[in-house]
Length: 264
Image (cartoon, rainbow, N blue to C red; front, side, top):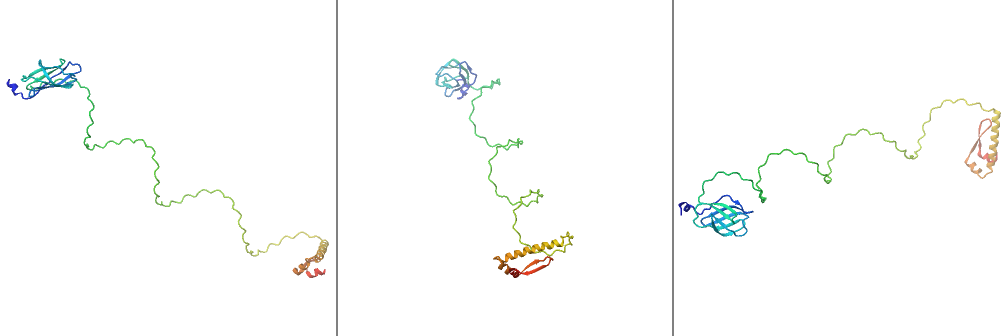
């Protein structure tokens, strides 16, 4: 066995570019483990059934297969080199076996692949440091009218306010009811002597006045005579001591009531 191959311990290596000739399938990676003499193929949409796996023109024994992974036995004593791997005669891949050579030049940037599936939500990270104070935002719209609150407790007595201005004159009220009759007051003092009155008109002639007095006297005597014959004469005599009679000469004469009863 060459010295280079003897120094190659169970190391596997690989990697080239796959040519996706198989419709819908693709080889992504191929590794050789010389210690276990196994070839590990990883890909997408690999054949559904066990298929031929050829490395450098040698058909390999398939140990296991799936749509993403194929494991095959490699012959012992493979010399370090780059071998062409074929799967189902449609998928091809370059496999390097042996010491790893120096890194090649940087290849051109490939096209951006399609977006992957949304990953699971990660755990919440630790609290970050306090940020700077932001600008004051605009005032929001007024909220809806709240419910009426409970009545608060009675406040303290306030100070007495200043006297207000005089109010307007009120309307005249209705006349009240008639009051009770007051008590008779005391008689006042006599008033001063009045002025002398004017002289009255001229009276009738004396003859006419005398005639009238005589007529009155006759009428009075007749009334007295008629009265003394009535049932109330005794009562009048007892109640009246004298009767005053005015004569034709304008003199007042007191006549005892007893003489009225006798006709004198």
